[in-house]
Length: 420
Image 1 (tube, rainbow, N blue to C red):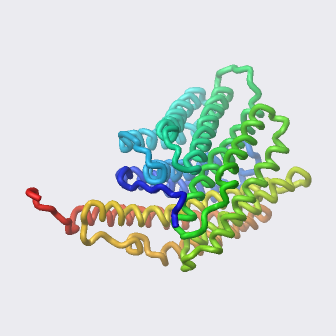
Image 2: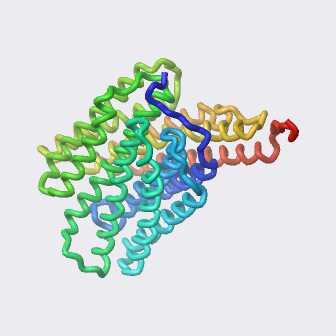
Image 3: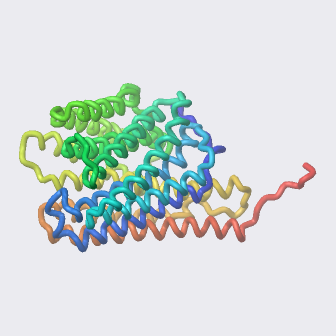
């Protein structure tokens, strides 16, 4: 069934490494959408402080937190790599990300050079250490195409971090012979397509088949799709004038991935009702619409807010889909591996109905945000519902962590005699 999947659970990190990032991401989700709710009238210029704050709460606060947590968990499992001192490294990365984001937001509003410096220092450390730690292990792995896509995603993260540091330097007191606008567009392109999209695609190549018992993706897609997207991003970086053409090619590649994923999900061998399947379908549907808007945006006047909304919904839907699969499995797996008889079953960690209720709120919020890109009043409702959705997610992650700790303290553990 899993011909292309090499699983190694023995090297999985401590559960708190993952849940620390996940809970932080959910809390940042609450903060981000509460911020949007009270600053919605300020989102009129893509370069003002409010817009920059919201964008980086989404990309660094939410997406990076969840992605880093997933990477620390999935690299040992999917790629078989061993991350030495994962608990210590992840904690440093975690705090670097939090403090770096706080300094970054403060710098947007104050413009103080010292805040730009600390933002670059902490975020640069967090992003580059994560990339280096995982890349050096992935370079040793040749088991499947998925780690190769992850390597390209991490290389893209390195580029994103370097470009971000350069932008902070240019916004501060450092004079560099660089074009800020070109750097900004490359930063956005590598962040959205090279880092977020490619990592999601690479993970999907493994987890769609593994979690939902589907046929594998065609080899031509698993081998060349992420390479193509990375190439388009590199060309845009070297030749900024080609950005329009490269965006079109990238959009086509993303649409191909989304459509094949929808087909695979419709042909899964265990067609049971599952909220995570709905989240994946929501993600792929949003990605298809985004790709169409990105392509037509080269020829017609298009609402940028609408395009950004669909891409955001694509990324966040995948976050929900992964969390509702990973968290219950981790709690069950770690306790069973430790020998606890009464470890909660996966459906007892996060009940499937809780995931479905969260999906209902999320999808209604998404609809209001889509309409809200045209009619401001509906955006208020969308941001409020999205805040509630992330608050529910944070509570569910915390309860899962609490069940794990409760079982460790009061559960019945299988003990082997020392003389055996």
